[in-house]
Image (cartoon, rainbow, N blue to C red; front, side, top):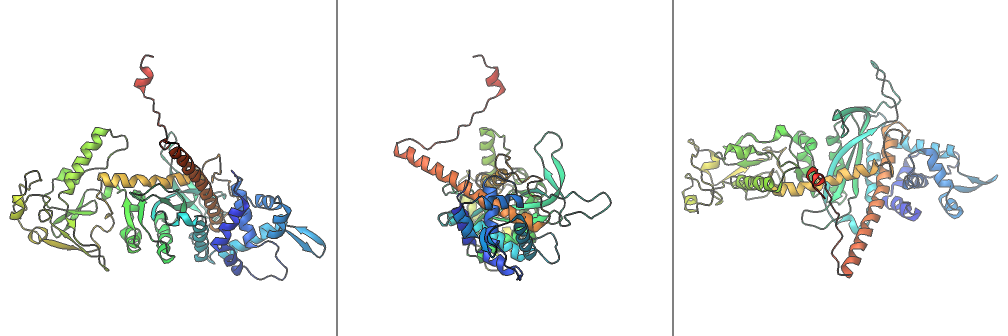
Length: 495
């Protein structure tokens, strides 16, 4: 599906990246025919038509435009010798100037500040104004991006792409579930719906590219924390255990300080009881009564193949665990401190150490063996929780409750983002898609690709909305996806 030229030009104009790149380019004695804006337009035209990220394709896309557009964009200009059409050498020259201006003087595998600003603004400009405030929730993930360069020979470190490095990626193919690749980690944050809000188009809102020798979780943090400074509030941030397992100072703490609410899967080594605070047990990011049954504290998340009966039993156990939790009675103050109350004081359980709780009905859990030595959480009505307690694992919903499971299910939007740019039917970022080496040219191409991909997602979303509106006008229910699943029993059943 081709995207109109006017749409692509509006994205580039709204981003303001073209004049910013032009300001970074060195002054030349001779007039440069190709501007940064026209270069970005050619790159997006190439990707909108499903062609690979080759500079020759950029030149072909620009000279194939109608004559009026060529004259407006400077592809065709009047020289002293007569009309002159843009050449491939000019495309290559301007692209190399832009890459040099946006690169670090001493490359270290991370984007420069100028490049990071260009990536942010391009993606933000690809989101229409009507959808910018549709949701503040983001789904974060990273994927592999191979470089065109061959890896260094065994025993050496020299290659055509010194910023690239060996990384690990998971595979769903038969055989080993993981393999090594040579290149970069692509991190992206995709818009997803609010917990109780309507569906929104899953648009890639932020991205970054980093060498595999750097931590992709740490590379994404400054990209997300720049959003509030740009007037874009952070809401729910959904991430898998690869992010949650990082040190708190590398992921959880800076995002909370920026206003984000974390909803993430916990790494197996972070689940269950992990120490105490004022006598209360720290488990799965929350504080629990010292007499909480151990099997409840060691609950694992529900598996994807669980039956309805297993889900109901698991939800009943997590609901029982929630009754033993020390509930927050204040929100975090400016320094990150908050106060929590004993569950018996809150009326959730019966405990002999709290005589007033023993008057509650017997439908509530009862502590039969309270701690012999009274702890602060048992002697006081409330206790103060500093920001360092469960800093890595604390999140919006109790883990692994039903509310957490339903909320975390929205994270798959990030996986769909990567699947659309790795689909051979449209554009696949497999090795050879971009035959340029280095972080900066690859990041520029991927940013343009995600901006184009957002337009495809918007067109599909608008078509679905229009179809639902037509069905509603005709008195029909919204169209739903039919899930057809054949089992061995159904295949073996007699006709």
